[in-house]
Length: 316
Image (cartoon, rainbow, N blue to C red):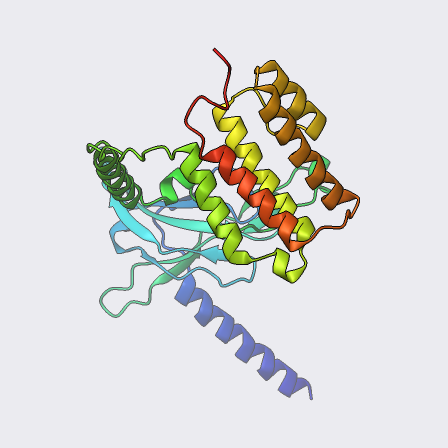
């Protein structure tokens, strides 16, 4: 048992010595630096990771891929070599990577792994840049931790004057103006002079109305009231057109009074007043009448209408 334990210890020691020999640091001095720009950031904000290695064999430095992590998102690296100005100073190999951190607080950023040497069958020496830390703050300040974000909204519509097709509006306006101009030009044309309609002779108009009334033959149908009403209309219109003193709508007493003012001859005035009063009794009091009396009233009206002009008007 003791011999087996001693053999295991010896094997472990030999393995450790071999691994140490493989990754042992070179004898030349090595200086590594790490810098974050800026030193603090908001959650998910982009920062720049800058690593530098000063070593005589800096030209053989190989940068390995960064360690994967759920909270660390690395971008594509950009590497280079800066030559030393003094012959005794070592060259500097550098690497620049964009970095996004999705964890709040003081976050430890592991250093990148790089290899130096490894030529002529010699194994490269692995090294790691120093550990650095980044302070990550929330996007909203602590005082705004209870603030509610506004809901998503669609894109804003363009103002109305940008949504109108002004070309079509102008074309329509010009078309309407042209139509209006044509209409105005058409209205300005010389209108035909109106044909003068000769005024009817009051006597001829009254005789024509009496002839139309005779064709109706109202008395033969027993329509005496209607016959008296139509005869009164014809006589009133004739008197209004010739004597000019009666007014439309005058009652029988008013009409007789106006005829007196017109100096109608007493005999004519008496006959006219008798006719008008008789027709009123037939129309309103249902006074009995017959065909002969109706025909006699028609003849009296015809006699008045057919008199020479001026005999029924004012006496000179």
